[in-house]
Length: 347
Image (cartoon, rainbow, N blue to C red; front, side):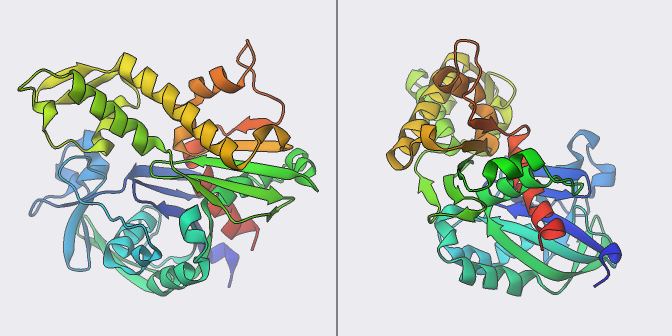
C-alpha cells in the first residue's frame, strides 16, 4: 500500500457526539440523525446551519445529522451496537466528512471501557461493516471510497498516543521519558461514561474501568432542578427536552431557552458542575489514588466543562495543579487525534 495515496481518518461515532479528524482538520457534531426535508439541500438552506442542513443519502434514507431537536440517535449498552445499521450510517457519514471520491482510506476508532472486554468481537463487527467500498450521496453528489484498513483501540488510550506523537509525527521525548517504567492514569470524562485507563509504561496494567458519573448526569440534574423550581403550568415541567440541546445551549451561556421561555441557570449550573466534579473524583478514588501516579491525564469533553471545578479541588491557592497532573488542551478532540496518530504513525 502506497502511503502517499492513502488517507488516514480518525473518527468516533459515540452515543452522544461524532468527532472526526484528518490531516489537520476536525469536525464535531451531536450524533443525531433526522429525516431530511424533501428536495432540500444545504446549498439552498440556512448558511448558519450548513452542517445540519447537508443531506446524506445512504441505505435508502435521506437524513441530516447534528440536529439537537426532533432527532433519533443510536445507542445501546452492548457491542451489538456496532453490528447494526444505525452505527454503520453514523460511521460512514462521519468518515465522509473528509473522504473524497475514489479515496483509499485507513481509519481508526475507539471503544469505551465497558466494551473493551469484548474488543475482539467489537473489532470484528466494526471491521466487517467498514472494511470495504462504500457509496454515499452528499447533497445529491455521489461519492465512492474504499476503506482498506480498520484499527480499533481503547478510547482513553488514544489520548495517551497523542501525548507521545503529535498529528505531524513529531515525538514528545519529554513525555516518552516520563512514561518509561512509570505508572499513568488516564481519566476520560465523556458524555455517557467516564473511563479510567491504568498504564504501566505504555501498556494497560489492568482492565479499563468505567465509573458511573459523566456529563449526562450533570445535565439530567440541571433539568431536574429547573423542573423543581418551575411554577405550575410552566412548559418545562413536563415538556420533552433533549439533553443534547440543553448541552448545546449551556456550553457557552447560562440561559436555557425552551417553548419561548428563558431560564437563567447560572447558579444551578455552577452547583451541579461542582457536584459532578466532586463525584467523579470520589469515584476515581474508590479505584485509584491519583496522588500515587507519576502521571495523571484528564481528557474528554467533560474535562473542559469541569476544569474550573477541578482547579478548586485539586489545585493550590493559585489554581496550579500538582506536578503529576496534566489537563489536555482541547480535550474533546484529544482522542480522535489519537486515533489518527495510532493509525498513521504507530502501525
